[in-house]
Length: 264
Ligand code: NAP
Ligand code: GCO
Image 1 (cartoon, rainbow, N blue to C red):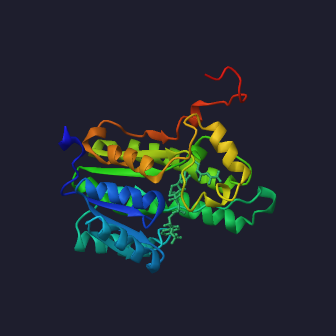
Image 2: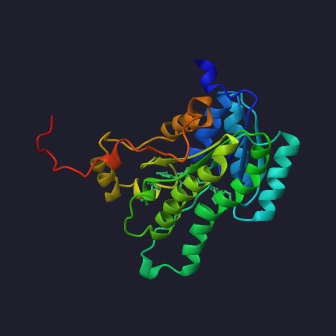
Image 3: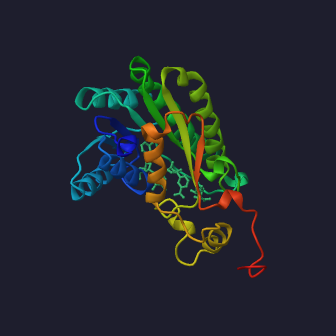
């Protein structure tokens, strides 16, 4: 049973994995035996990431590159292939969000979110998949969102990107499954990280909405998401492809309810 989730001998790249969901994924895949590579655009955050791994008795190969820059991605992945080995597991985790009403959002801001959240997973996957095809084996996990299914005020760019990433995931499945490469997405619900801190902390009313719309009645944790990543990175998911695994405490299943109505 344990060998189903044993990643010993595998090389995993988690983009933007220095904190939040990406860090939790890297630590868990590392505990499962994988050699972990993490990139970011901030050396300071890479340094704190190395400390987090050290504190868990784990090694991590860190490197700086911007996932939206094809040359930097090629250089970074070439460095990983030389120093660590070809990437077996790619987690396209890096992402940004800008919460601005459409009418006020500069097109440049819209493009930037699309670049990081949608174009970058295309760029990084395209660079990494060549060796996966050669070796007839690989796992790609795209970090989608419940905004791959829903819109909401102010997150038009983010929802556009995450909706697109859902279909890019399915297209990658169509083109690469025949090479024994499984490409899936994870769709987290509302997770307590730096990205959601502005709408979760200091009594923000959005916090009440999330608490009532989420049947589990809590914010998710980065570890909740990492558990799903371990499944999609392991042998246990070898026949799962083109799937978006929602890790959302039931929010997508829930239209909502009137507080106190027929509550058990
Ligand atoms: P986060 O704390 O904002 O972390 C995102 C990471 O991506 C950061 O390390 C960031 O680095 C990195 N990054 C941003 N732009 C980059 C670039 N151009 N090149 C390389 N790295 C870059 O976010 P999170 O909450 O952990 O979320 C991680 C992923 O899950 C994102 O894709 C997010 O959209 C998705 N997600 C989050 C939630 C949630 O509720 N938190 C729910 C659904 C989906 P810097 O910090 O140095 O900029
Ligand atoms: C927001 C939140 C969400 C989460 C996540 C939900 O402003 O609505 O940031 O977008 O980040 O994507 O799944």
